[in-house]
Length: 358
Image (cartoon, rainbow, N blue to C red; front, side, top):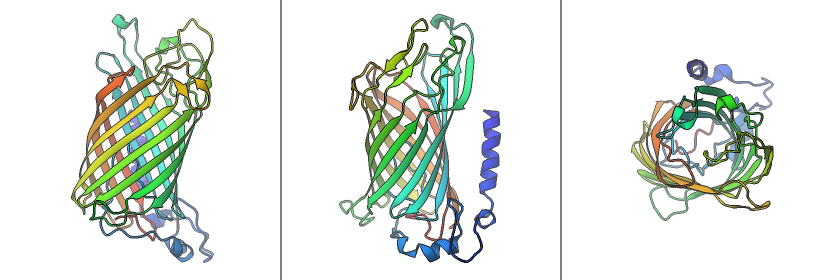
């Protein structure tokens, strides 16, 4: 954790430099540029027709942790967003700290590209009552997530509750870059960093501004492809495990449904200060949408998460939004009762068209 803190601090100081000092341009005057580091004059010249509509109210806030935002970044703008989720289960001497590093780039034409590189630190403490006679920890990369967001509509009026909301679709893809095979029995599952499956998903997102509130909704369906998994593998519900004395298993996960929503209250527009109340859950069924009956266990959960947020600094070219909260269990089925402290910072680098809603 100390090495991660040093890395993040150096990264943050690097990004606090003036954007112009880090811009990459050929200098030919032809208006060419390289994303995500871009030359504002070149973008403004070549992409003026792609400038997004300006919202008269919609401050740049950290937003919810689990529910996506329907608006896309304007072309020439981009952001990096490290998260931290510490999954803790009472009564079990173990924890999992997940740290997805998100990069989002505005592409124009109502499109945005996002990628998530998750860093994971698992820890298992000694628990003689559970047959665990030593502690173990493991740090590495989890499954990598790619996303293309396509915005369908813009918020028609940020003061009227029944005006047209912003709506979008995302097309998501996960690759199994996290370790899930050749697990060491002496690590008691701490060395498993992924679930081994290629996943494809489609999500619907909605956001409605009604000053001083914002409403978020996200619904999605995720197909998890079959995978060959071996002894010691822990299934997606985090509890069931393949026995160490068994062989390889052709695993079929059930269809995964994702659902989340949040209500955000902005107390101070300039500072993006306020709070959120978020609901988030997932349900994995006993049948795959394309691959038939599942042999992985079915499960579901629903969490509620109170969160706070603030923006500092908040200059026109650069802003940082900070958020913190805790996810608390509401209900679960075949899933552990997990308590999850959370934190995030979003570092925005605004191009000539600014950040939408700022």
